[in-house]
Image (cartoon, rainbow, N blue to C red; front, top):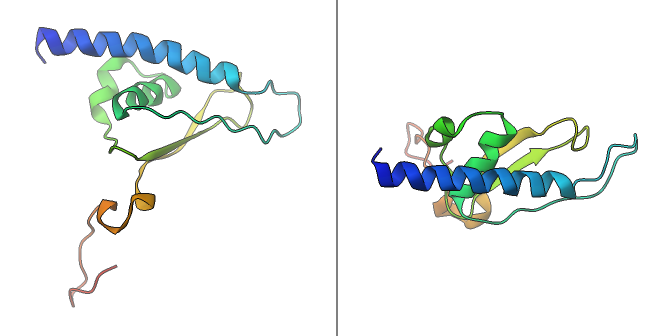
Length: 114
């Protein structure tokens, strides 16, 4: 990774810390009752990679280990509220974008589509 790319990654990583904290602050406090509160973050896949790494307590060095397509959905659940940390339920879900957005799978022996 070149110096310019590394500097951009460091800037993105710093922004993801602020974004992660802002999202966690929007969660209701855990008072023993389940909440119907849903927090939605919409943004470029790169910032979402940072958020995923923050959720998993990884360093910025792990960001290139993940891939997110434009328009994909990732779900992070907080069953114990903001103090319990997040659980990544799914990443890079694209079925809502239409047939051609779904990753191509191996065809069957008869070339039938899945």
